[in-house]
Length: 460
Image (cartoon, rainbow, N blue to C red; front, side, top):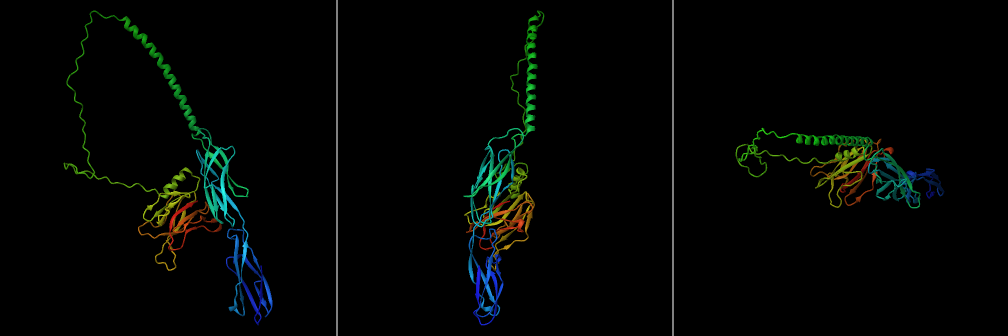
């Protein structure tokens, strides 16, 4: 863009040019200063170089240049204009993890990133050679804002169960389909394990053969004994004759007609430990039983169960402390913790992870003494290793409302993503930390002292 300037004054003046506004980092002025005699005209060139990133929003973007005269600084002027940035799309997808194992199902996740500067709408489907798997994808249609990512859960189910034998690898692909564009296929592998391991099948076969052998031998040994006893018994009866001199045997003694008393069992009376009155006899009274409350299920409890079933996977579990209700049940890997439509703020979060070498973060809470309308962080920051509980905020009575939080995981093992539901603002867009770009933490929520969190979702 060429910018013309005329000196309408009566002295020689030097004019300096400085880009201002959102497009200033992408704007250069050549030359940066211009010296004009009275009544003369000069020009400079504005060169725009927007990057191919989501930060360069598609459509008209306002720009401006501040012109400062050296001799008359009070005559500074700022001409403005519009630069139209054309839209572009760039979508990337990745399976997390690329290989899943299971006997009856596998649960991979598909991360879809929109690296363009316009919203992307896509549908998702799965396929494999031989139609050996069925696919349950949720959600099956997504809309992704520029610079954002979504995580799609997929459940793979084999159409036939392997009862015995070795495991089998079943390659598959999840496709990201957009209108007018070639589908983006992401390849993965489902390793189907047998229902019973091979050594167990061999052991069962050996045990069955031994059992059949034992039954056969037992039957073969029993039959000769029974058949030989019968003729021997008959021969003994037929060859013996009664002796005439043998006295008759005495009849058996009659059974006594008096009943025999059964043995008496000594039964100790039970002691009543309830509220009802006892018999005030001897003894010091009943002992009270102390009722113990069941152990509460925390985020660490839930993530340890997931880690036991999927040792190589990455998981995050979490629960929220809702004012007036207490702790929610633990949720994991993108499910909601909190409430919707009940006008209840969160005051604390309990988070636990596996497969990412721990987590750290801090709570940003309501500040009743604020002078700028913003909350404040609660020190110190909290951290916990894999499989352990991490707590942000306060679950005590009259604890301040949770406005936001900062969270991260080990940058070498992965990234953490979050989306929050704010009071009177609804659900916000999902955002992730960017360890490779130096952004090791991700902030969720708002700094506004009057807007608190109602619910949260996390993924790693």
